[in-house]
Length: 569
Image (tube, rainbow, N blue to C red):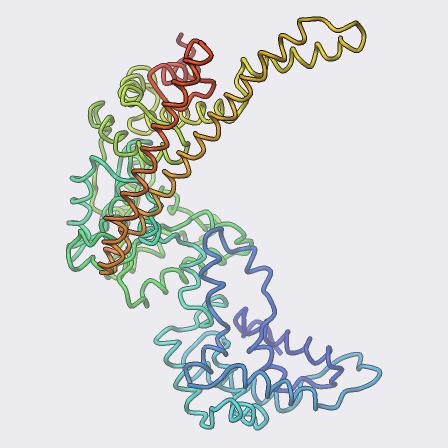
């Protein structure tokens, strides 16, 4: 067998069938071995390693193609599995096992038939579906299919055709076993993230988003490229478009589209051999072209495609692969890059550059940044479990504009809020300095007690430490309860939005008028209980009223972060 003529999955099925024959001490590999190997494929470790985090759920949900075909043909995969295994164990075995196994004439006939089938369909490689159709012509496999309620081979051929559609097998990875396999591996579905509530609210970029929507709705040259300095929010505009698509706040021509973000790093990673990158890119573009739904491809740092995959010896880069589809209007693409990189890389390629329409993304003003931060405030409060005061938001925007001149708004201001909230969270979850000092002093005195006779000082420290420890644990527990309630509220809001999109008015009403108000009341009650308990403790102990745990981000925390970053005190 020449492994070069098979796809990766088909070649793996043949290797698995050989291993199966060796396992049962059979001297020859028969079509029944191949059928079992295709119905129950062994785990593909290399594929698991290449699957990016967050994409594994899609691959795990897809059954082997042979099982899909049997189900599509109204058969029972379990009955087929049982019948094949009965036939397998009845085959004569050798003792001792044979040193090598050979390809039987029946399997050779199946491989020839699959090869002819691939040529008839004008495919470049023999794929799993070719092997399924060819193996189904074997008498023993036919007997097992009949046991699984598939008496007619035409049912198998029809099922394969329905699953495969119009796709061609033009690469070793373009197997028909998993629909849109390359898209799952090398792209991130931004509309799915928006649907799950994993994209932050987008504030103040309505004009840019409307401009992108207008360009995407054009008949020709319908590919916007977002141009702006780092940190001004180019990727956020794409996220805002994804949220609008999910909320049906777009024209009818974009209502059913999916916005996918191309992961250029995953495309390039592991492409050891010349042409492997181009093969992956072609697979992605082919699946976009064959998709029934409209797909908009978002490419962050699009200038990286200029030369990506090229070996420097006449190799084709990714941009040249995009040009034909962009020219024919078969690909809708949103690019993002900085002005300097656009001039340096993209403007030099006039054929590529004229396919795009520029959308300039300017840095927002301080007042616009304040509005953006107010929109993001709730997300950061839930994540860090702290309260962010409005004074902290104003200080972050003002000080970022004044002192962090090497960076751009709103990114620099968002980072200030994020780090200040993280600092408060770390301080809260660590022991307060006053409590830590007393505990260290108590441990030191305990050591001295063993050497000297007990002193009154050790008792005084222990007496002072006990109420402080109780106060710390109490504040920590109440703060955790408030944070858990806020996380629950955020989850309920996501479920409500999903129910409204799906038209499930009963669930949406139940969440809107019962579950969400109850959770809001719980948060208010917990915060009131915390304030009342703090007041009672201050009245009873007569302390200065300062809490051991800081749970709010204010202007002072922002000033501290700016001073740490800039060295300006």
